[in-house]
Image (spheres, rainbow, N blue to C red):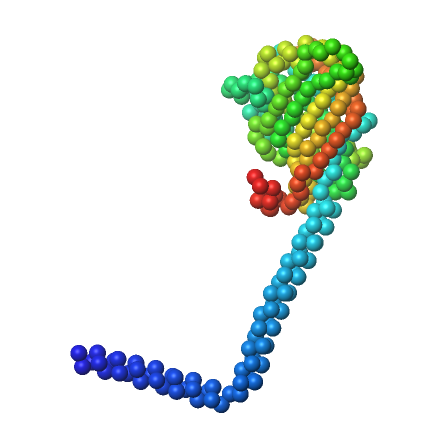
Amino acid sequence: MILYTKIIALHMLVYLKVLEIIRVIFSNIDLGDIASVLATVIFGVLGYRYTKIQDKKVDEQNKTERLAKYQSTITVDDEATSSITLDIATWHNYETINQYKNVLVTTSKEVINGLAYAFDFKIMFKCFSDVLPSMIRIKEINMYDTPIDQRDRPTNQLFLTFRSKKYEFKSLAFDKRKILPMTCLCCITKEEYEELRKHDYNNKNMNIQIFFEVKNQFNVITELNLRAVFNIEDSRDVGTDSLGGQKEQINLKLKEAYSNINHTDEENNFLKNSGR
């Protein structure tokens, strides 16, 4: 008990000595000096915060200019021919093809065990940006036709929707005219295959809407929504006599195209800033 009392007394003595030292220090300091020190500290803090805000604004401006420079403006080329190539009565194992090209699956029915009828959709993109994209991933394709002459009586309309089986980037090549041919495999059911092959395309335009993203070597990703209206030029046999070589190609010539850029960002920020 006596030891405990001595410890308390010692703590009190130390506390009083500290207070005495503080009193002596402040008794010898002019209030003007204290105000000067406080003002220096406050202005230093405010200056630091202002510098950080300005640095952030400069970084954001530089990023905006960089993204505007490196984003990809893409439409459909009006000279090259796009096409739909049907692999007649041929099954595709799209799970093995998936590593080489974008593979999309019809939304009407689930395709079983990775096997499906399919067609190659080749579209001739045109890039107006100085920096050309090197990779592409297709999110969704809507394909339908409309009468050229709106006064024609209504006929059966083709309407197919495809969504990416694995939403991954695939390589995208380009030529000296900045044309980027892109081919994806669209998997369909047998019923849809028959409808597509036997459909009456006379006096009709083919409308195609594509939701996709492209990426360039600077890891800038541009998200686009593109709609193209095509004239159906002709349909021809482009196959061979070999097993599984029967092919029918529907050639498409661009009539008009509309393209919107939905979002552009650097890859590491793209998912976060696009709200996905």
